[in-house]
Image 1 (cartoon, rainbow, N blue to C red):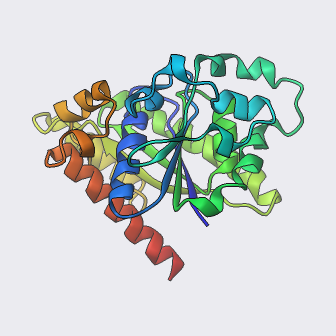
Image 2 (spheres, helix red, strand yellow):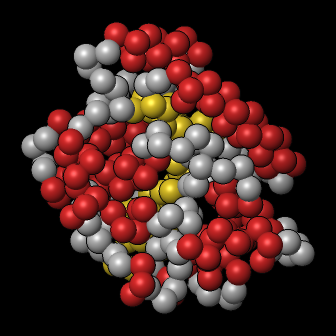
Length: 259
């Protein structure tokens, strides 16, 4: 049965979509079958995997608001499958306002495809509304990207508090939600302050901070313009190696959990 991981942080610009795309590609390179579900109205994961928004009929919006199944919305890509997003997600709070158990729609729908994938990665928007609720209720764990700068570090506590709130409710449903790990991103190797943030995060989460750190990289910035992961765009680049290292670390951690 596949593991569902929400890639989430309520602060924008910390590398959530970059991590979703490139961790997915890296896991795929290790023979893991991966599904990405884009839950961000900006649809950056959708674009970053080479899809054109105007050419898509079925998106995560329709999965959450109609009888459309996950399987009907899946688009097959070279390294992973994706359920694309669309701008309609901006209005999903109003659309689902009177819906019962609206926070658990995605959880129920994912049951039909969990057996088909090794990992299902949920690319979350930088918000605290119904989309992030659906992602957290559907997930087994949360990977939190944190940019190596102060405001991103400060926002980390808000994300953790949100996770704790959902954990409390999920326990009553006999379900669990763990923190998969905190991923430090966009480290500028020339900036001493970035390393101070690294140390602060490690002090706060000594057992939950990934050893792999993602550096700032022109290849990571450019790859989405070509509709590719950095592994496809520049396999031998630093960004590609770091995401492959992250995938190895994630796989090793998951093996240890099962032992």
